[in-house]
Length: 182
Image 1 (cartoon, rainbow, N blue to C red):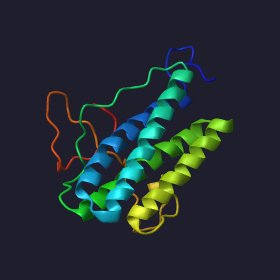
Image 2: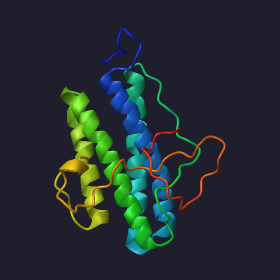
Image 3: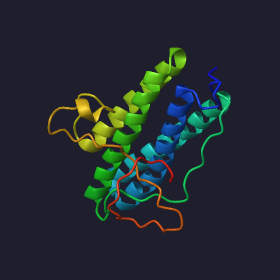
């Protein structure tokens, strides 16, 4: 079990878990949009991904509690990184979400050890496969956009961001963010 450091700050593992939880909250929200704008097989794929992210979010909350932390709550809404008006936009958002979660999983793999590292690596593998399904191709280093092949589609921070306090979220806002509530 990892406990907070003597200074009262969260351990690196707990910080990585909290950041991953933020990304998973945003992915759950984002997949609601993906599903709403998708059709046919893509709609079913979005539902499967939504369920997978919800299950992982719940597991991460248990891990945080087990580490002595308090899981951060989801924001009431998130600002999407771009307008999602078509099925193609929805697929692009799914790639963005998977790439963002992958980046946070890389951080958890780096911060953890033992069984927790193995679990995080398996989650990263699952996320990379889901991203490849939406993208239509794999990338060299999922979660590490700076190491992806030149011209690759690895997205930056990767999850819709929470809107500023007091504002209302609008689908189609052109704001990118870390997926962490502000």
